[in-house]
Length: 195
Ligand code: URA
Image (spheres, rainbow, N blue to C red):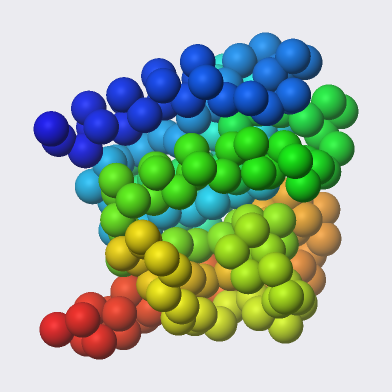
């Protein structure tokens, strides 16, 4: 089975089986989106209003900024893969609760196993703390993390601030753009280590 079909089957299964309480208030599930063959997977927090309406991740203001950063490093959205730790919109965009994160955790891990990217980029602290609970985003952003997780082939992780945090804050925007521009070098570094 190719990766595209595997992902379609996975999303169909989880949309039926996911026990997340957020299902009751969200319009629809927002599964991951992009190339199943992607070398880079970006993980955000949870869908917002636009994502909830359209059923695709990062299609609002934060998504527009993400696309701007991708284009600064010559990447297109269709060549990467974007997903969230929680697949349903929390009411009024509040932070997802621990039990909501747990309800979608296996869905996310199975997605990552199928794609098996070279690197996973965390967009914000929620995504990072889902894998590295003890880290602070203010310390860890822009630094390559290497860790082997049971059952996961990807061991390289790169935390960034969340694009929404940088939308109305010029200095944060600069930090995020500088960190983002390290991605091509990081991919080369990973390829060298894997050669
Ligand atoms: N913010 C996120 O974390 N995810 C989205 O899909 C949109 C905004």
